[in-house]
Image (cartoon, rainbow, N blue to C red; front, side, top):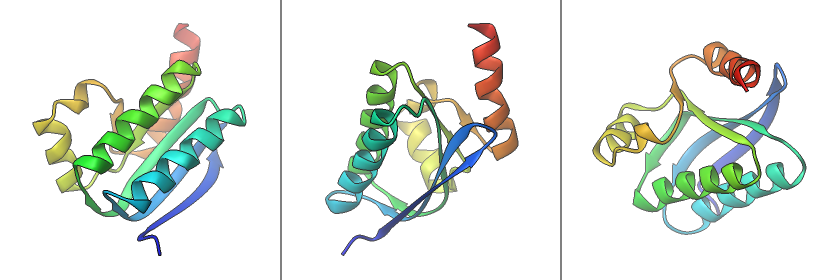
Amino acid sequence: MSDLNVSTRENGGVIVVDLAGKIALGETSAKLHQELRDLINNGKSKILLNLKDVTTIDSSGLGTLVAGYTTAEKADADLKLVNLTERATELMTITKLYTVFDIFDDEKAAVNSFTKAEAAA
């Protein structure tokens, strides 16, 4: 049984992936990466991961986020993060992954950033 709940919704043309539970070694990381691959394979190019309800994230979970980012980048899609927990923020800082991801505290600002990126392109 997985300890990660994944649900998707649309907000302003952006697919928001709401995550709740653990992103850790094993089934939860695999579940998240498969969900991201499925979205990208189905032509979704604006993906926002909402980490507000993530209770645990380990190095494997960080690896999954990076793998998802790489998968998105190869498919010309954008993957951004919103609502990081204190622990996730700490891990992003320690690993310097905050330099890789666009990270937001507010979902509206995150959704709007996809439109701004499109306008700049």
